Amino acid sequence: MIEFRNVSKIYKGVKALDDVSFTVGAGSVTGFLGPNGAGKSTAMRILVGLSRATAGSATLLGRPYAELACPGFHVGTLLDAGAQHPGRTGREILTLGAMMLGLPKSRVDEVLDLVGLTGRESGRTVSGYSLGMRQRLGVGHALLGRPKVLVLDEPVNGLDPQGIRWMRGLLHGLSDSGCSVLLSSHLLHEVEQVADHIVIIGRGRILTQGTVDELNRGQ
Ligand code: ADP
Ligand code: ADP
Figure 1 (spheres, rainbow, N blue to C red):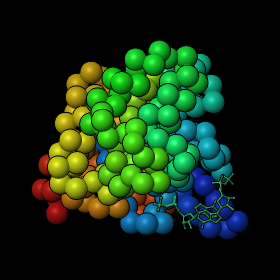
Figure 2: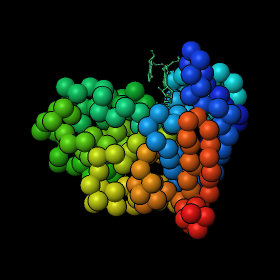
Figure 3: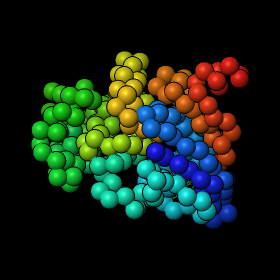
């Protein structure tokens, strides 16, 4: 569903990614783990067409993002959640997103319910949301078009333990329906709690990968 093949990215002499290869299978929740500056965002940005690889290829459902017909229906992304539209309410943001995908307004209510924001989303603008509420809204936005692949940059950041449990339930429900998820984090305990596979990256290189159990046994 997601494949990185020998991807490198060089920014003016800085090697942000160095020959990165890994795959995320159908129905897998894969955690992309590494410290700040390791290259996670760069890889995810390349995957969803926001940046270009210096070498190699990153594909979703067998194609580069730019070649997907109606990408919003195939791929949901959470990048820089909350940074956009701080002056609007969550409902307004989801309604705009639904309009752009040609979806009925009823989809907004379904998504608000799915991410646990029903009744909390309308009274104030996103600038007044907690980080956890912003993360829920960002994930809801990514889910609008019922995508087969989700790419989430630091989705657990800012969630309290209850929010992490909710996220785990949501991601596993999606995975049961065949959706593939790639999510990044710089915290092992966050990734362990929500993912079944982990890919570890450091200084632009893949260090190791495997199931959560395999990696725990290897330590
Ligand atoms: P992470 O998401 O794991 O924190 P990043 O992908 O943001 O890591 O960064 C990887 C490396 O690439 C870092 O050294 C960062 O400073 C550098 N980098 C990221 N984006 C750019 C850019 N647009 N221009 C120059 N260097 C960048
Ligand atoms: P490219 O189009 O070369 O792939 P990006 O679209 O990833 O580059 O770059 C996004 C912006 O981030 C650029 O305007 C870049 O100047 C800026 N940037 C510069 N240095 C860094 C850095 N160390 N970390 C993150 N972003 C950076």
